[in-house]
Each structure stands twice: as structure tokens, then as C-alpha cells.
Length: 542
Image 1: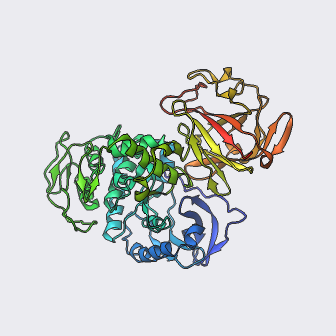
Image 2 (image 1 turned 30 degrees about the vertical axis):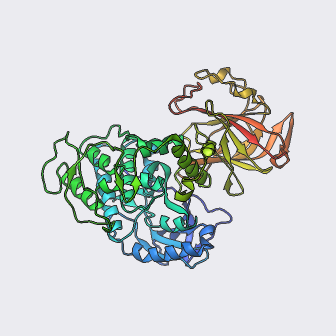
Image 3 (image 1 turned 60 degrees about the vertical axis):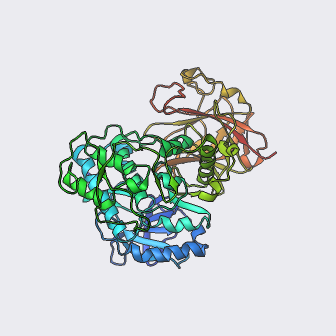
């Protein structure tokens, strides 16, 4: 199957035109760590240039971590990875230059072409396990392995951004835990405990499950449910078949000590259905995994140990170095941990961006903070102003209404990336009468969403928020702007109501929104499964 080229977007007016002698030709992406540009070397070779965020620039501790990681990064063998060519932690701002991989991310490919199966899925599993083996052998932990960090080049999959996440761990201060992406984070990461290469194996398994099923094994949204599933529930491995299913299940063990190393995993994948000793594995037999390592054993260990059969599903209740995994002792503890994670997620750039958890805070957070969310529970909506996420809280946990605290200034609505020809529809009002939506009802029966009510004034991702049924906001195509691999966005700078248009900066009263995304195209409101509508209150000062 031909591999499409990696998308390049034009440079913005305020983007640099050159970094460290590398002319920049366009934007490749943006995430929690920085912005990636397509650049050129003096001899004309294409490279990927990552410019790290400004907050990193002013953090000496983060710079120290970055400097220490660089030497290890440049030792990583170029097996299925994008090689780091140059980097400077002392530049203003710091940057990393790496090999350019011409191909879409796994996330983009699954979204646009569908899931992987058969030999294509096997090649992905072997290539990415090989990459993790090379990364771990150099003493590096990826820490943010996910579909967006696997690029599908013409000559095979490549893993990118390995080792870059660790310096960002330092930016949150000494109380912080580790770094990761919510749906791909391991139980030890979510618990804020020390984590090593084992977390990459957990993320690898989540990524392979995503490639086979189009979703990670513990789901996407709402995030409190995802976090609870990772800590306590069995993974949903969907259509994954043996023997790959067994290897994925072994890597999803709640106890990191019971997961195979990357070297052990790769050996089993290459033998396809046999253990490292060459003994065939019957299709129904559980996959072998290593026993817990003695205290003090170096984390990356690549020497196969004694293997032991365990069930293909993860199970709670194992302990290692004081880390209790599995069932959380009491509902309050669960809510407290979730609240801390979600509070930190509120500062993230996108649903797949790097986020930080806090171990010390998780033990003291109050359960009352459980209504604080990073994004709306059904549609995963975010609101941003001045480069920061606006605070969100759930005001009704039975029929969630999300309260958004905004300044009197233009604001950006961010939505998960829309499928082709799929719209996000926003009905806005000055009272909550638009919250009267019957689950399963036709959208044409709603006064705001009925056909013929007009279309709001939008172009290239910005425009006016209409507050009456003369023109509800129907956002599709170039009426939304691309923000990242995972998000689209629309900037609201003006509000139209009572026959007049006013700047958002003059808004003082609450606004009520019903947002609808018709995932299955049947033009009905649905709450179950992948929810399609959301109720929000925009709370302006005054």
C-alpha cells in the first residue's frame, strides 16, 4: 500500500525562518513540547526541527535534564527510529534537529485509511519493538510512546520524540511524577510512582491495540473513566488475534515487573508463537512474561530471565517497591487521583499532548475537586484564551453541563479533529432553554439545528458566534482551522445577538451552548456510546 507524504503546512507570520543554519520550509506539527518544522541542511537534505516551548527556555532544571539526555539520545542505534542529528539546550529557545521521516503518523493513517491487520500489523509491532529495544539499550526511556509518535515511512515505521519528554517532567517542579499521554499512560505513571522502561512497553501495547481497533484499549473519553480503567479494569483488545494478542496483553500487566522487556518482546515477536527458548506456544496458552526483578536490578535489563505463564488479561493486586496496583482503596482515593490528573491536563495543548501528574498532590486532593475536568466529558471540547486552557468544571454530574470560566476576550473552541465532511454545530443562546434536547430525537426538530436556519459568518477558522436561530454556527471545511494531529479549532472574536454584533471583549453575561457532532451521520442526538452533544455555560466576568 503506498504511503502518503507527511503533511506540511505554511509557516505563520510569527514563525522563525531559520534555526541554527537550517532554513525552515513549513510546519509539521505542534504539541505539548514544542513546534516541529520542516527544515533543510546546508547541503539540501530535509530535516525535522523541533523548537521547544518557551517555558522550557527559562527552567534551569529542565535544561539540565535535557543536556544529560542528549548524549544518550545520540547513542540510540538507528533501528526504526528517527535519528537525532543535532541539538542545543542552551539556544534561545532550545531545539532538536532529527532525521526527517516522510510519511504520516500512525494516528493519521488509522484515522484516514482505517485499522491495520495481518502482515501490516505484524510489521508495525516488530518495528516499534525494535525501536524501543534500541532506545532502552542506550539508557533512554521514551516516556511518550503513542500513535502520533510513530511515523509510517515508505521503508517502514519509525519512532520519533524518544527521550524528549523527560526534560519536560522537570518543568513541573520536584513534586511532579512523570510524563505521558492519558490513554497511553501506565498505572505507575498515573499513580505518580517512579517509572522506567516498563512504561514504554505498556504504551507500546496500547498503541498496537489502537492500530488494530482504531481506539486505545482503555478508551478515550471521558478521562476519569479512562484513568479508572487503566488502574483497575481489563483492556479491550478487540479484534487482535493470537499470538500478537498475547504479547499485547502481557505488556498491559498492571505490575510493571511482570511485563517483558523490549528485547524479550522482540524475541517472541520474531519467533511468532514461541517463547525465547523456542518452545511453541499453543494459541490458547497465556504469553510468558518475566518474574519480578530483585530490588536494585537495573531497569532496562535485556537479559531474558525465567519466564512464567500468566493469563492474557491484566489483573490487579501485584506490588513492587511499595507500588500497589489494581483496585484503589476507596472511591475517595480514586476521585482524588483523577482530580489531580485532570487538573494538570487542563494545561495540555491537545488530547494527545504530554501532561504531568503529581504524586504528592494526589494523596491530598479533595474528592470535591472531582468535578474539575480538562475537557468536556462527551465531545472532548476545550476552550483557550491567551495561550492557556480555560478552567472547566462539571456542574451536573448526572446530565453533564460543563461550566467554562472565561475572560472578556476572544476565545478559541478546540474540538477533536473532524472527519471529512463532518461538522461541529454550535447553538448558542442567552438562557438555558437550548438545553432541552431529547436523547435520540431528530436534530431537525430542534429550533437551533433545524435546516434553513442559516449559517454563521466564518472563514478560515474564525468568525462570529450567533446567538439566535436565524443563523446557528455550522462549522465544516475551512470554517475550522487545523491545530494539531488531534484537534481542530475555531476562534470566536465577536458575538451576534439582537440584530447587532459586539466584540467578545464586551460580553458580560453568561452564554449557553449546545454543541453537536453527528458522528454516525443519522442527524439524531445521542448520549450513549460515543456521545454526540454537549451542554456548556460560558461564564464571563460580570
